[in-house]
Image 1 (cartoon, helix red, strand yellow):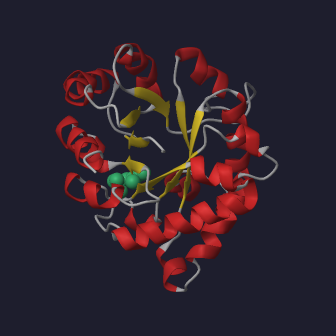
Image 2 (tube, helix red, strand yellow; image 1 turned 45 degrees about the horizontal axis):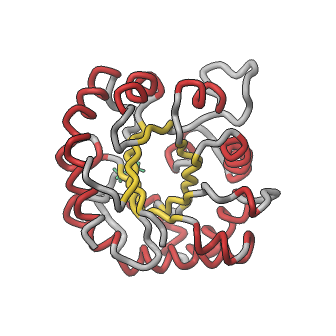
Length: 253
Ligand code: PEP
């Protein structure tokens, strides 16, 4: 039985004071929940304050990206050891906005995944097709390639913490949500590819989240499906009421 994971991606929103104020409102609304793990991924500058504020609460804190090296002349970057030193436990890898605006590729996703696993961070690897790829029936090819390159050279025994987020690019921040049928079909493709490249045990144990315009009113129908193990939420995670409602609705199944 895979435990649900509901993660918030705050993108470039909320300063440290706004982030901790969110937690003050949000934490009491989710504290009874033992069916799902809840993770907040704020901007880097909010991480230390949020890690401190989340101690003793049923909420984990993750980063939105990281470099794969521990240190070096990489202006502006944050390393995995810097994240673990402040107590972050999760990290998003290869979000489509990182791929689109910051030239991240399946190869850098692979380097980051190896590094996150080596440092004990829970990696949430984002994959998903563009609209033109879906419309030309290339969704399965795109997802299979993204998954297989991401996992290249990684011992399946090391993949216990792996989480994958299926985020169709056409559904992110657009208000267009994949139907439960579209999402479930894509999740099945991803799970089958995991089985092919890492074995059936890894495929059965890996949580695959759906992301793309998840809101309180569609969270239940998306998260109640066999192969959907939670959600990665952008816009609707910025408000404590709306995000706690997503957690409640997603875990009501
Ligand atoms: C995201 O940024 O990962 C995301 C899913 O955004 P939104 O929920 O706003 O579509």
